[in-house]
Length: 428
Image 1 (tube, one colour):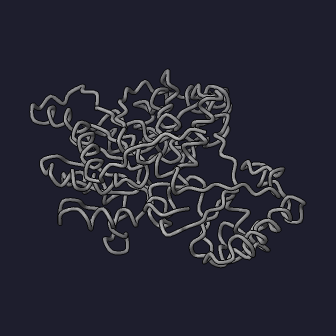
Image 2 (tube, rainbow, N blue to C red; image 1 turned 30 degrees about the horizontal axis):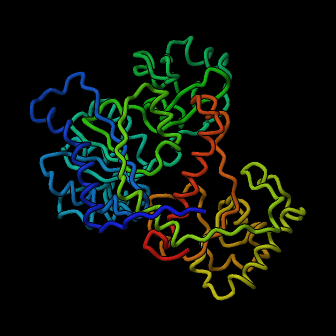
Image 3 (cartoon, rainbow, N blue to C red; image 1 turned 135 degrees about the vertical axis):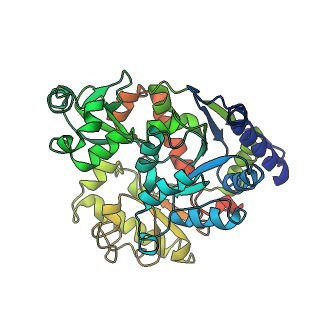
């Protein structure tokens, strides 16, 4: 087997490459801001395709600190990341909604107030809906939106036949459907929102008014990242890795939204070399005939042969190969219902964990975990999952090919692995 070799670059060189891409992403928006040419302008959509663990967020903070004349809305995954960004940015450069118990207002209300004040803001994905509505209303026209990773960009909300959808939503004149499948409110829908509540549940209404609701023309309502976040601001920059394997880029294409991918070639070379040197992958022979597809593993009964095999395999792994590994340094992924007793009771072990001798101490994480450093101390990881995108989504996005399915699985797997200490250059 031949091995390619790469020159490991100094981190400063890699950082400069990333800074160059970030400045390029903001360049067009700065031109439009300074000339006042904002009307009917299509925002520049830039995807910064840069490896995990190479300081995308840190470099971003350093870059926006130098661009004090620009307004930013930064979207990160967790409240820990919000606090980190606020702490590392220059004092007063960024604001964030506070706890409702502190401010007396909901975070959605605070976000609107911050936008109206013209502040630069950092939020989590939990405020996507409100941000999408503000974008539709024109509140983000002067903002540069930055999204740090895009998990769950597209999901199946629920089943609704097109006939039923047409009868209850379209024929009464509350909504229309764009060629892309986007469901948007008409003037009647906007003015008669109270009447719309009689035929549409609250969550679906929120998706409708924030640009998150699509219908696949068959029998599914699709929930997406708010489309208005990519059509109304000055610019949109997304920080991610292996973008070609994400549902997000397929969604942009489906919505006829043009984008550019700016890749970190130097960093990618270092990333590949790090993977060769620091990453060891082993199979668990006893589990090779057990399916870990999400729906399949959820169907296993607590006393089934499959669950018994998983418990035995994990217990043996703990007693032998992982005997000297602190459980706090172990990351485990499977369906949440198999690791915990229930979604509301995380104190009791679920079927896979009950006899594993790993439950008390190991870190269970969702298979879609990305954009966090909370597990960067973990030296070992167990992946009980088959990463398959929902075929309904693949069909709707026109992405149901072997090449894309493989790219998707690899992209998600890499994101998951790079939550561990390998992002710090330590072996896993």
